[in-house]
Length: 556
Image (cartoon, rainbow, N blue to C red; front, side, top):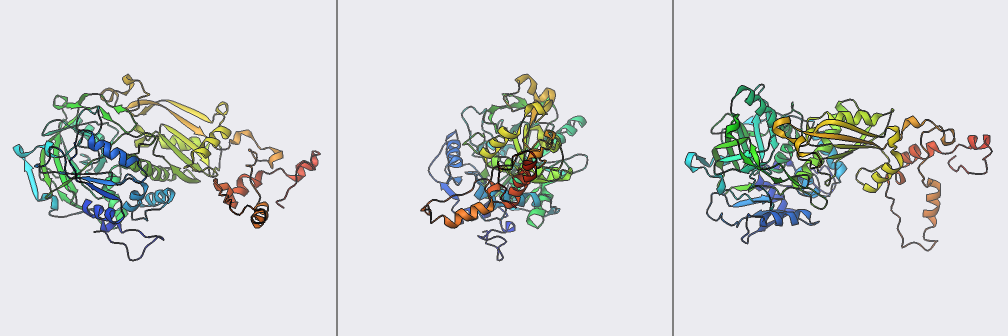
């Protein structure tokens, strides 16, 4: 079981991620934190589990869930389902060893720095999931308690929260990603796949050689492994290496039974398989309640994995997740993608040489299609450089349809502040609204004509992307009245005025009333100086233009 670190790095506590090696360790930690419940009454895999999971993910006091009494699975080799593992900011903080109440910006900064680290994995000779090995006629994935998550899903999707392991046939680099896959009979899993994905690139190379591709599906992991699998790292990065760097010790890997793929030794269950390059071996897949909040991907023939072997611990725990993101409906995938994209985009912008990035944020409600960047602007049209860099990322095939850039006086996590910046700093006639047409994009976006998102024909969807440049536009030119700044000052209270009023607050008879500033500019004197007093009306200009009685400068 995970134990508190002896020397806590942050006030309030935290955990050593090295102590959370398995899903059992993670469940023990969640129990201690009051973040876990077991559902022991009989439940139906057909939509009932999905509805329970949805209610718990959407509730403010929701918890991780384990189901151990699932209809039709009393006598199968796998009887348990674990879900909602990281479907809250509190549990996400715990996964990274942080105190549960850590703020989202501090969490993103922790991920940002952690995702830069690297440590190669090490091989071990055996693993607990080798306790049971099924091959040949003994294989039947229908013995795994896979839910039908939503009413109009095309079937039971076994892969919703399973790291998928493949290896680049050219350079041998591993990729670990989360991709959807549907039961297509007792020995097959049909999969939605795009060439822009990590495993899609590996599959394209196999197809060109007319060779099958070996695949491994991993079920029941510690949370960091699954989070890394769902994070959109670049092609030259192996998630195995990032895991080692992040926790400070190598990830232990063990070889598969039917291929030379190396998989995490800590897994509950591993499905080993082969994906044929030949379209005649494809099987039907879809639709599925997708991350964008709509059903995505029609019922059609798609690349299919034939199961070669299943290895599992005694009494294994299967892991899955209820998908589909919209306001009020967060998902585990939403937490992973929003937080990891915030960290990875920030790192990417810095690597591209963009200066002055002070925050990056993707919220839970925008199904990956919107990202916000906060900067201290240092040159004209910096926002366009930022959007160009983001749209060049490989994950832009699924995400970042819209980019909004603001300055550091706007809190990215406050929609009211974002709306204020949009209303007062965006002038479409001056190029603050940029549309980039005929770009690659998500095949799951329902606003794109169906004919334009034929994955087999085009390899991607088709997007018109949009930049909202809500920074102060330097093309406006300096205004002498505003101290030669391009924008008038934000209306603020001076420090002297506030100190006067605060000192007399009780005297006014208002002691029971508490004012709490919402915007950072009202709490940070540096921001107040930069975006208010630096552009205040100058007494010299007023005097020169006969307006010396119109304003009193109290900042001198």
